[in-house]
Amino acid sequence: MPKVLVEYKDQARSRIVDAARKVFHRKGFRTATMEDIAKEIGVSKGAIYLYFPTKTALLAHVQERSRDRVVAAWARLLDSGDVAEGIAHSIDEIFSGEADPGVWHELVAEAAADPEIRRALHDDHEQDLAAMTQFLDRLVARRRVRKLRDTATVAAIILGLLHAAALDYMLRGQVEESRRTLVRELRYLLEKGG
Image (cartoon, rainbow, N blue to C red; front, side):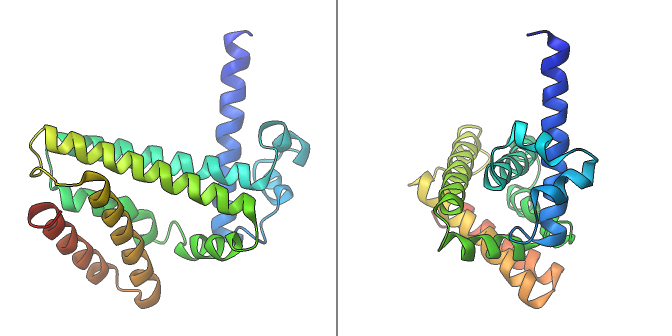
């Protein structure tokens, strides 16, 4: 396959994922349709189905793109910067209002009745856990944090803290207080706990 065609397909897939993220944020996952996403970028609904067979498959790619951005930001912490602050920045999209934590909670509720969504969320969580565990192992190897007794458990706790901070912000709307609490908890875990 010619390189130009591969690049075109990658660009088209990327445009669809970006549009889906915006539409899911604006309308919520349940009410968003593939047609809404197609309209967002000016293509036919059929064009989207060429790349993504279901809305849930598209959701998985939206989550993957988000994780890739976060992991890239974490990589900068391997050499310098405040690790707790850097990890807390993982949810800046939520604190800034760019991403709606309500969409994630909606997905969790939908997962109870939809095995495809449940599988997508499970896979996403496992990938998040693997990325966090690998990141922590790299931090320990570079002596950016102290040696951890059980890296996988600390990774799971950090993901839980990120979710709790997003929920705290969603319920109280206090960005600075939610962020300060999260940073304090992360510092404790990475310096004294774990």
